[in-house]
Image (cartoon, rainbow, N blue to C red; front, top):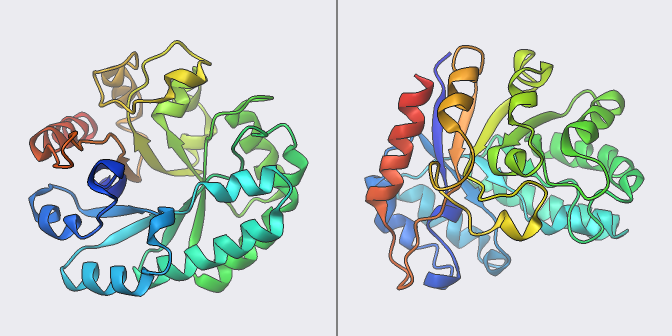
Length: 268
């Protein structure tokens, strides 16, 4: 199966351009991808129908929907009901965008994974919401403060085998997990069916280094080695998450396409 390459709308829409989603209509045809991953932002609530109608009419495709990152934070902080309500709202929006998969931060915030029993307890409700919406949930390797993402994945898999996962290289760099990941069952058995690509400035385990989000080659991750190690075993989708928004709100589409070309050529 051929790998499919996506671009996150988060690469293009940010506070620098007032989160103006209509800019996607201007830019998307000049971006060399198979589809897009829609990044949910708080300012989009109340405009879901308008967004989906206009963007789909303009020919955009959103194979993946990135759920509000606060869902995992609410779960970690003990507000599971609030989290599930937000999840349901996001999944309804994802369905209107015709997305088939949704990215979930299952834990997050200051609490992170320090109360992981809360995150596990929320999983049945998450699966039920996803089943009702007809959308597959992908659990991301969000950085941890108590354990580490791959260990947390194991705990989830042991209790809830129906979940699938996505591996984020920036988060993997934070935990020094890139070598461990490509040699593991997560990729060999197809448990990970989606990748997020961006670089990490380092050093490892430094949360202050999580931003800015860098393009491959701008940080410490050896992407040539990483892509070479998974080239013949990974069969799934890939989303670029490295932003290209300039200070004036415009987008450097040439840089975006150059990075996409590097990723494609590295995995073909």
